[in-house]
Image (cartoon, rainbow over all chains, first blue to last red; front, side, top):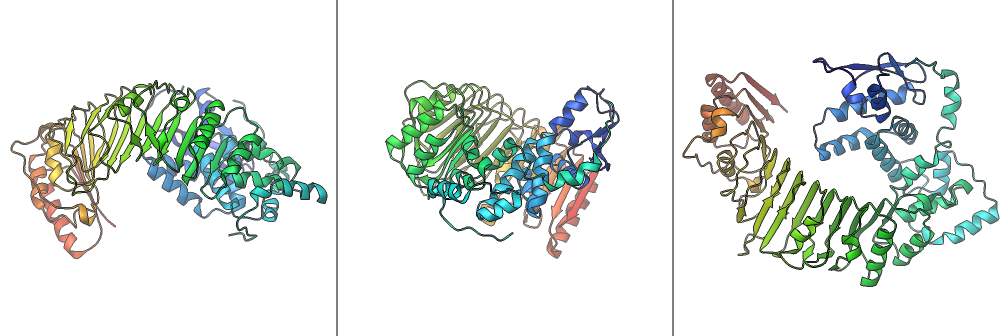
Length: 163
Length: 386
């Protein structure tokens, strides 16, 4: 454990495209991955985050700073998260869920996953395949069979729109 | 830690298939936020996805789902344990279906149960003795029994939203079996019990909402005995309170029927009021260690501005109150007697924060308060105009 000092400690994080970011330790330890490094005394120099690019890391740090500035009030935290994610497109959300998973940040992971689920909900099969980069490897017969088997799930409206 | 070299050369390649390369556990996490019927629909995407949904740890059913689908999902689901079972918006079911689904959830070691189903029925014993349950939310659909054992050793959050009770004994019996409970939310809008007894050594956060009509002659007692409490929110039209909750940090009251006469908050340090001035002196005289007092914006129908000056200056003003904050309340506050009283008697006041929206009327009042603060030697006065 770091010795207790009066001044807040700052950590330096490095993205996989070599961008450096300064962030207060108190905000950064929202990430269990980073917290473990700090607790193990590995956070003295630069912390390399090999699975997160600079653009995503900048966004994650904005979130870390924003959410840690809010006192223990779940409703306010929730509305911050909603606002933070409201203008993010699917690709950004996908990057963020991967980053949140790698950084082990459960609150961000949940919020982004919920947002992705919300976006997916009314979308067509084609849209989801495209956005998730899924190759349809069913034969036409197999696909027809699976579709028949899951007839009970095919109800309601769906759309190809990106919005 | 030795600094490792970054792998920027492979970034572009990683980016192109980062989404299709998502691990199953990330995909399952996303799927667990979808209503289960939508999650099952992803079978059609590709071979990899065919059975993926059946491993998603959360089961979420919505009103327009066919009840047969619940059985189908439960049959096809492949995990040994489920994280969440949620049935929302008055999900239609019979007694037998309800019991079957609950038994399924309990057998699958459910952790979170969130139920709003059609009809009301007594909670089954297996649910009240579910050792894995961490979060239980029941809305509009259940009757809490007053007999039988309750053993919920892992339950941390309990929400009872307009449920029914077999008798006054139901609630204490239920709570006595929740040995690790941290948060309890109770909402009631009917004249159900003569006494709501909330007694727990572990509850840290307590929210009690009563929505009762003004016209009723119904009287009920709310007895709170929660020594570990750190947060209390009461929104009510209650007529009597008894027994002393021992330690609070945060109290909020809504409407003006709240009668705090027999209550004391000896360790209360922060008080936020969304209520009219009438309550202020009630609280001040019962909270000797109050340090922070916040007046939040009050809706039109809740304000009455009856300030009753206490006969004695409350102890907290003489020795503890350091911060007073008005959030959008100055422009509406036409009763300056209270402000004057607080400023005159708060001997150790250090900070006064005023947040207000711009109207010329308000400017005048804010100036007046700031002037008063100066006269009373308040060290920090912060005025924020929105």
